[in-house]
Amino acid sequence: MNWKNPSYMLLLCHAILFCSCHARLAPQTLNKEVTDEHGKPQLLGKCSRSRLEQAPYDSWFVRNYSDYRVDSVTADRLRSKLGEGLNASSTGKGIQFTIFMGTWCGDSKREVPRIFKILDYCGIDSSRVQLVMVSAAEAAYKQSPGHEERGKNIFRVPDLIVLHDGKEMGRIVESPVQSLEKDLLLLADGGAYTPHYEGVAQLAKVFREEKTKKIEKELPELADRLKPLLGSSSELKSYYYVLKAAGEQSKADLTLRLNALIFPGGK
Image (cartoon, rainbow, N blue to C red; front, side, top):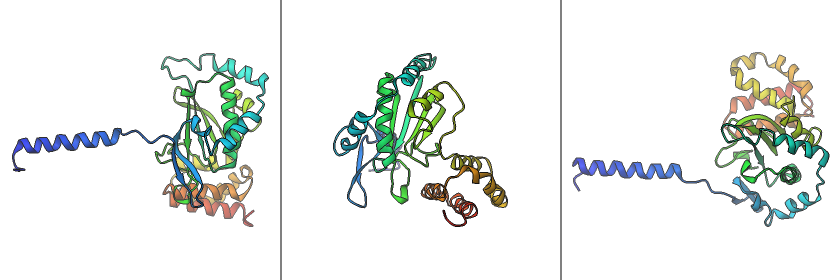
């Protein structure tokens, strides 16, 4: 074959372009299941609710869904609120929910079935709920294979993000402050809502807005600001592993230094 022939070169370029485009457009595997270091199955990445209703995950999903009693008084108000313009907009997107969770996580196993029961009660179509599974492995801690978590500051799960036309209205982190129904109603009303782990959320904001050198110089002052917002050293330790797995080593190291300043005894 004469590779100097222009027709051959043109054909080769078309072949490369075709393959690369199809590789980029290949859909992400849905309901991807892997085995952890202890031989237990877990789901990773985008997942369907129906997969959670099947073995082995049904052992906790179905039970926790069935056992939960919806606060119908609050949920009726929530259902009405979700129907007032939030489900229909000029963009056609309306209100949507993204849930980050881990099938290995006890809080996820408890809260996510309850969330779905409330959304079912409110008549939220499944197409408005995106479910993303994250890993517990150290090298990919709180990450999805498709990296849907990037830019969303996922450091505790479950993390229920409420969006309107693609813009975040607020989120419930790990567990509700009052109750799932009341917290969701407050978010739907556009009220001021502060989820759990405000200290870590504030630190993440500092990392986004300030340069590392400046943070390092003002570390004692930052520790004083964050101390009232943190409950225990485990909060920053967990965030350290999230940052480390994401390749943010300098921020991870600063997080450990802050933790030592705030909790010198490690408690």
